[in-house]
Amino acid sequence: MTVFENPVSISEDLKMIRPESSFWPESANVYLFKDEDGISLFDVGCGAMAPVDRLFSALEGLEWKSKRIKKIVLSHVHPDHSGALEILLTEVTPEHIILHEHDLPYALEPERLTLSFDIALCKGQFTAMGHVVPKGSKGPEFELIPYFKALGCSMCPVKPTKTVLEGDLLQIGDYHFQIFHTPGHAPGHMSLYDPDRRVLLAGDIVGEMVAWYTPSSGGAAKYLESLEKVEALDIDLILPSHGDIIQEPRKGIQRIRTKILEKDMAILEALQNGQKAFEELLNIFFPLPTVQFFPGIPILESHLQKLKKEARIKENMGGTYSLA
Image (cartoon, rainbow, N blue to C red; front, side, top):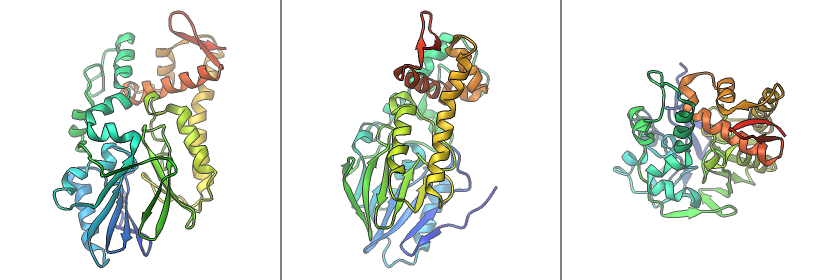
């Protein structure tokens, strides 16, 4: 496993805390900005002790004049991005906690994440398929918030001092960011773009892997729209929430788009051989039981909804799918 020297220096006034892995349940990347007489953060990472220790160590080690926390900006309220707030707020009092207005309900009541994660859909489909749950796999008894806690990346309530919307402006130190609403992975996921520096804080929509997506978070359709939105920007550098800095922005965006569209094409190809039930498609695209319940079911459902809306497939009596 690669061990990164933290914090990673991006520029004189911007640093990144990079975890040892880009994959859940590890923390998201945390970005530290020199902000006048203090420090501002983009995401705070997971609430487990190791990422929290990394964060505090980085804050202590910076040679910036003051360590006062001015702004905490959250790309979205998932535990690997905001979970550390529970511990962080016992030590510091930021002037502002900022997130997108569409993520406010989930911030105030983390239990509502079961809605944006489409856990009811997962349970309904899994029960309808009559699956026996293998040991260690998710199933109808699954509960989201205890699952986060069991993996050492618990979720906590977040009370923002300010919410933002598409088109709002946000200054962090010498950076002047425009807010872009980029759903698909989360209803209120946002990306920040500085047109002068041509830097994009992408959050989860562009990175080392494709972030999972659910119908209630925007699904494949909104994820692709979000990619189209940021691709239209003049970007030199993408700072992702998972993985290393992306120095070829268009290539990075196109890679994520291609992987999402590949699932559309794979569904259409599977249906060329005749109609298929949901379970049959699920077994084709997500053969591992550990991922079928989540994120397999909501990802597949979001593609089926997209393809039906585009009139490329149809849902038949009995719940099977065929080409339109």
